Image (cartoon, rainbow, N blue to C red; front, side, top):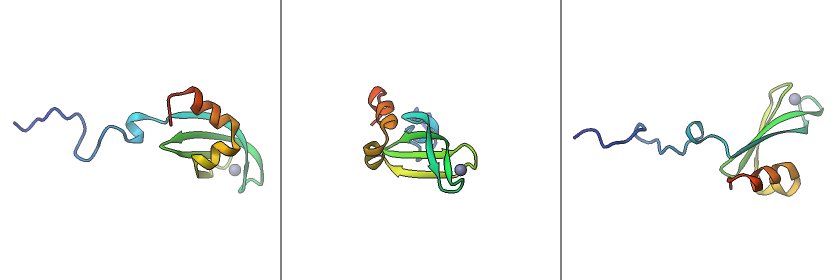
Length: 85
Ligand SMILES: [Zn+2]
């Protein structure tokens, strides 16, 4: 028996981002340091990390969700209403 029924290669649990997807995503106006103005950001949360990406210059940042949810109402709503976190 060499087939143990695993659908994933060794070392892949199935919980990886590419497989399970993000836990919540939204778009929000945020200040972009590169653009030096408020721009629309594509945001998502995965495993307690919030990632934001400026839609204009594509500068990306990661934030700890504990911090983020203290300042981002939209992020909190997204996660609270979803099944993430
Ligand atoms: Zn930008």
